[in-house]
Length: 108
Length: 110
Image (cartoon, rainbow over all chains, first blue to last red; front, side, top):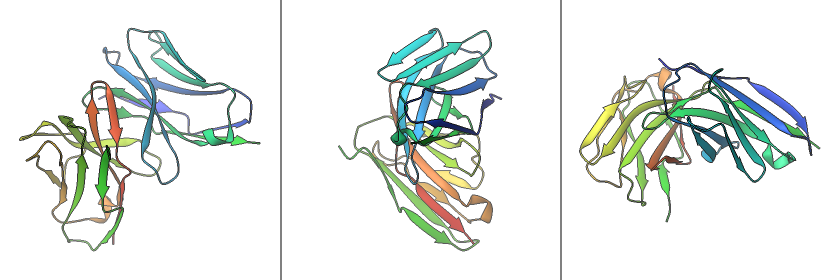
């Protein structure tokens, strides 16, 4: 079945850019999502991209999709301490397959 | 709109007990689903429903039952709880390509 992988941890300083990476195995056409989860809370949809797109920008967020390498990334510009959370990539439409999550720690 | 609501927020069960996790949405979404989240893992799909009266299995359905008698409600039943079902459970509903998640139910099975 589909496998979605993420690195476990990323630490950045406030004001820097953060780049969170995700790789997947199934190249079928579908949606790819980025969710944010703060401690004790549910998942908040940040942004998504369809698999026929290369890039999507939404304010401080930039999503890049490399279809050849099956690689998805989320760039957060001017990272703030409030961005500290776990970030999940997910793939699919009716049935989402999630990565393991990347814990982002932003230090002042 | 309240969005997706889940009750209870937290529950402790003994092995073998049964319980129902409640999920409701007031957005008139046809599609609803249940996921579980375990430490160090992403969310895994348990069951989903594409409309009232229609349910199907996800990736990890064993030990769980669902039904969908109304568009608004999608309860998840544990018939005989096991320690392996200790997890955080999230319900979601979908409109188009966007899934909306509830706040979660934290379940501990002793």
